[in-house]
Amino acid sequence: MALNRADVVEAALAILDQYGIADLTMRRLAERLGVQAGALYWHMPNKQSLLAAVSDVIVGQVQLPRDDPDWRAWLPDWAGRLRSTLLRHRDAAELVSTTRATGLGGLDWLAAPRRRLEEAGVPEGEAADAVQVLAHFVLGQVYEEQTRAQLAELGVSAPPDPEHSERQFGFGVRIIIAGLAQSLRIGG
Image (cartoon, one colour):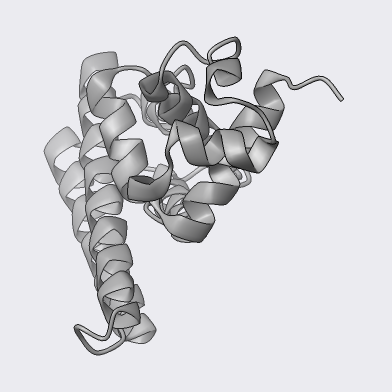
């Protein structure tokens, strides 16, 4: 069987889920795929490109909400779906944040929420800024949740309370949406 880019990314995602970002090495990936590490470079120019491709796969799994004429209902639904998707993959918030900061990702995963705000009458630049604020909140919340869960696995702290995390997330999203509606002076 010939190795291809999709196989490499899929195996990398499996390693991420099992071991975390720190242990996602080209050597471990090559071992999983049964090839020499150098063979991976035919498919990925470097580790940063590999991580960006894995990040794109993760954010590409976010299912967009159904159309809702009220952006104030659509955006929280999207944020919740983003959070759920990130929580399914170990260290996903860290990986996606890093990929976004470096500009290496190929998928514009904020396009749909940006469009939603633009359709509600928000100017393009302000819509981009507003979505960025919401994305930062979701990534930060998930990063903290994932860190707490990993510390609990190590016996360093008590397990996180999922109900508390859910309430905290919902509260934060409501505040952001209310603030956006007030600041941007947009309605439904």
